[in-house]
Image (tube, rainbow, N blue to C red; front, side, top):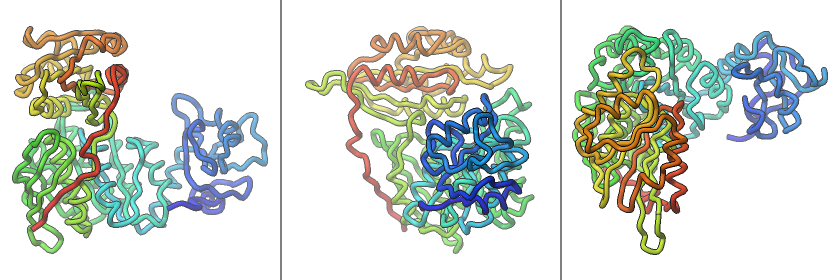
Length: 483
């Protein structure tokens, strides 16, 4: 799907802007440091004004820049597309890109698991057509239009991750994406600073249906307390509701059995032909939450007419990404092959996702200890101390040998832990990273989990540098069966 993505004429027509010269762009970028030659650079205003980097972007080979004025130090005849507002211009490109493609577009939202589910969908659809999805977690007010503006017209499928921090953010992004299917992973306490309660979060997530085409499938978690809110909202928008989970009728989870660091899932999925198909699929992770996300992804692609057998087989090739449950073995002594297993889940955290991660750690069978390094969960509002402390009573915590905590909020969890389980507490990730050599021993399995803002990636990096990373011997293997 390489080639010309935008010409100056097409981009000007889409945005109502003025092109200073004729140009052709093969991609769209918002970062002058990483853009590929031939990209259209979008001078967004965020922490810095993107206009300050237009000259650098052009010097690095940008085909043109989307701007609201001619930046200082840039020639009047430089290749520019001048619009009234850059973000509005990017949204216009997104709208035009969506209108000109025949791709079937799936929107994914939820409190937990959006990015993992998006990546599952990317993997399972790749065997059935040309798939477009963001390489990163681009799910906000600029990330969604950027992903759409990058979509080639030849795409067969697109997967759009849609997130929010405040009320009213999801609906306009969903309408922009003009969805052929919507998937909501789970509703859980997250961003509580901006909402009165979990019901408010559910209603905001349900706003994704405002961008769903009439009669299109809405794939919803049937096992959560707020499921009635989601189901009612979906039906009110004329969606074809598909419930997944143990309580799901259309995508029913029968069993998720853990075998070492893998999980084997038995389920039944009803296809567009109204025939219920039994299937078994395997995931390269032991997390039950990944099994639920995998089932939801298979239900979504089946509803769009994809081949279920091919999709289930391809799902076995998916593996968690960095910061989202990726596992690797770190050899401390290559001669003796002595080392520990590291689970990197440091990108995001809320009570539901931390609970799921602890449950995954609890079923591991290491020769040594089960160790959790848990950091602050951010944006939980006035209840943050209570929600952190409550993790100490999570049923799976009984199987964890040592818990180290990072951050002022995680102090409440550290205090609530049983003394025998209580490890180190540090205020910062840098302090914990500096103690990396004290945290693990051969045979241990270590989970690192926290919100991105607490910076636990430093701890992951410090642990990884204690030894040598070893590839997973099961990488690339997949199995499934469908009746």
